Length: 593
Image 1: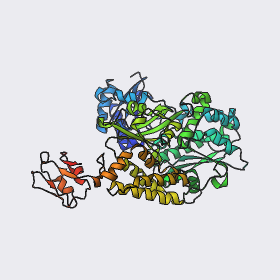
Image 2 (image 1 turned 30 degrees about the horizontal axis):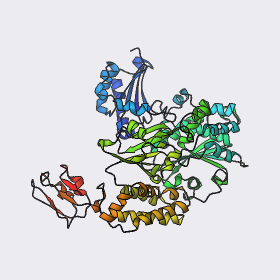
Image 3 (image 1 turned 90 degrees about the vertical axis):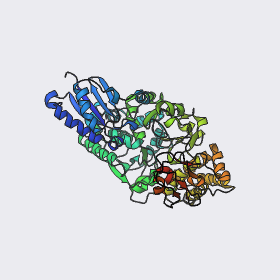
Image 4 (image 1 turned 30 degrees about the vertical axis):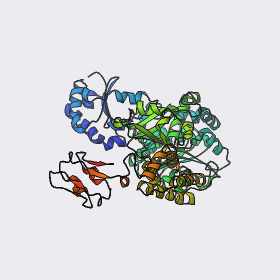
């Protein structure tokens, strides 16, 4: 064999959940059995672990590269490895029926990868591989060739805005902190990603932790900080493990600690594990948690840039913001500013989930239309159902209807229709989703995560949830819509922190665009999407029922009767509308209306 052979196996969380560790071990065994190992081929053959590949719906993803040509396999299981080694690695005959299709390439070709560019290519546990793709050259350049003021000015010119949700200009934020007279300053990476369906920050830390550390080093030098923290939730064990590994490697190389890159600048980073409180994504609550206090926000001003951790000037940036910084230093502010829209520069990493064919992690230029994301990258709606809405910005974001499908995805565009960028979660909804129930689902989350410090959020979200629950259970009353609107606006306008201010967004946006569904629930006692069980009637079609009895076994109140192998019947007077019979029937004989 004259060409180098590399097998890349995705060992991100999604890949591991699909069995990638077993797949990788099987490759090792088969390589050993077949004699494909260093003893025979020198260093020209290797099995290589990489981070998240993005197309999580097709895990386990495996690349087989021979020389400069690469083939990608999808849905790989351990028992398939032997054939890949025999036919492809040894026989040089790719197994075409296992290769990814055109949709895989469409998924990736319609993206522009800055943050995710090296994910899926380098080993996240190897600092040498990060250095080999120009890792830490930006930090070296910043510390040895630029002044702190020049770095801050570069960030301003780039147009980089915070990717954690608010979109505040990064360079401006850094300048506020640097201008404060203080004997010490801090920089914090906010990796406390808590949005349902969001996995952007986790995947970046898992797949390229050194990029985040390098961004922190540059930021620390720019503001004059000698200490940094990565605040990351303990529920991300793989990310935490790789982050700690990266910190040790960086210290061994002299990239952290004393006299970085031969300068007089000292900087070190500690990891602080969060307990999974959603409110600790808010910067002042995060600071309180690091200080050992209960994670609760405080009133602002003063802002953390003026008075933050331990009362010192503090900068808090999220994972994605920090991971952008090395690329900006290396390639220039003008390059970064050339990407995106007029007021929203660069790219945005998005977790694309929901009723969509191609779920996964994507990166698109700011300003990309929703339509392109959903129907080009995402491949359209699963099961050829009709697109109904997309919820952006996490549980505090709004629901954007089909009429705004051409909306550009940037800070201003999303805000104009009552939603928000947030950290980048995007949940696609189809015609089978009930928008009243969706609003209730997200309110359940934010209400449970409210720290309870301020009355509008503590009591207001609870009252909103009570009204929504009443409506979905068929007990909606005249005036509920107006009450929801008024109460949601009050909570938004008077809450202490961003959690309470944005928690009503799902309610306000669904009231704006799907008011007719609320009216149907309240006035007709009907759920148009047939989701809210309390508003439905369950019955069995005799011509489709085979009498298997599964529905009767699932019914907890004995409302279903019938002889074996004969059609069954639901007694509506006993039925509690739990939907268990509908879920249990394998023959689609149980219907609801």
